[in-house]
Amino acid sequence: MSKVLSSLRENKWTRAAIPALLLHCSIGTVYCWSIFSQEIAEYIGFSKGATEWAFSLAIFFLGMSAAFLGNVVEKDIHKSSLIAAICFSVGMIGTGGFILYGGLHKGSPIALIGIYLCYGVIMGIGLGTGYLSPVKTLMLWFSDKKGLATGLAVAGFGAAKAIASPIMQTMLAKMGESGIYKMFFILGGVYFVMMFVGHLLLKKPADWKEPQGKEQKNSIMSVIKSKKITNYIGIWLMFYINITCGLALLSQEKMIVKCIGLAGFVGIISTVSAIFNAGGRLGFSAWADKMKDRNTIFKIIFIISILLTAVTIVTGGITNGANNTVLAALVLVLIMFVNAGYGGGFSNIPTLLSDHYGMSNISAIHGITLSAWAFAGLTGNQLATWIVNHFGEEVEIAGNMVNPTGYQAVLYVTVVLYIVALALSMFFVKKSEENK
Image 1: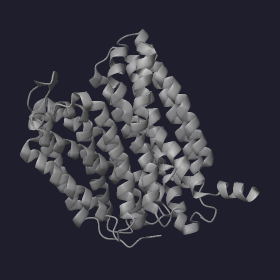
Image 2: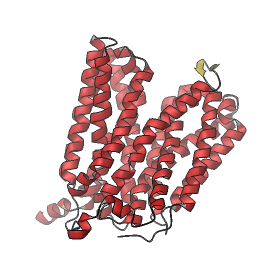
Image 3: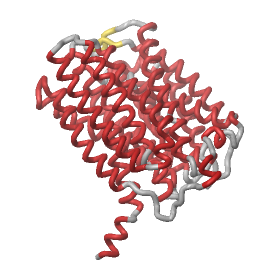
């Protein structure tokens, strides 16, 4: 019996996979923002546009906290995972508190600023540290299948929306008008328990020894400069572009679905797209494990994205989809693949970096690279919104006022960006022998 318990304590599933899922399935609910953003805006007396900045700030601070706290994660995953659990749950509960305050004092800037601070800054720090904490540990436990391991955890981040969305919608429906702040109070407590259990279980393999002496003192810049600096610039930029294009399209997913006459299926399509997001994270990373050069998977993602986007542009899929079943199906295929490619980019970045720069400083260098996510979080959504606001005009489709021309125009920008990303992947990011 004692041998069984000892085996469980030092098992790659209980010490890496399960805690990673507990952490990522909690913090991944940040992508549920679109479910309740309108309710928050109405409850506190502000426009939806004003409250949207809370989500943008959360993604920005996710990336920046990962960049600046990467060394903390590198040195002590228990400290970083505890910081993540506390910041994420405090941020959620604090958001609920300021929503409650906003309901009592309609239009109060204190409520809006408080939501920015709690959901954007505090939760954002929890997101960044929570996202990074299990990644290196997973790659160490699953050294022969690093892509599968990181894909499993990051798939939890992507699947969180599919799991939490119906729960949140049910809570909002059953608790009435006050349900919006009560939901944050309840889920803040639930996610703290999940993340704290993950924090307790997370542990690196007993045979892994952290670098000592000169190897330990290497700065991140010296590690990056161990290869041509253009190599890392290429990785950072193609990662940034993949996220920007993903957010530009996916942030408008609900309205695009209405443009092709499927407003009644928005909820189902949103859940299916979240499943594709999670599947892409797991599938693309597991597939990359079988490739000699992990950068090949990025080329595949970009080529398919370019082809599907180009076909949708040429056929006018979004503008004509409401009257043509085939074109509507094409738009749905584009949405699903962009979700999958968006997720696949996240799961393959840490393993691509480890192949190029080694495992010794992977948490820190992965953290710096996630700054691309921070800047994409500020540009992706806003880019698409600006294009939609400046091109085309609203028309009625199946009882909904939408701007098909504006959403179609977004594709012209994303296809150019995908072409740039493919060029970076092909000419800047050189093939590397795996660096263990």
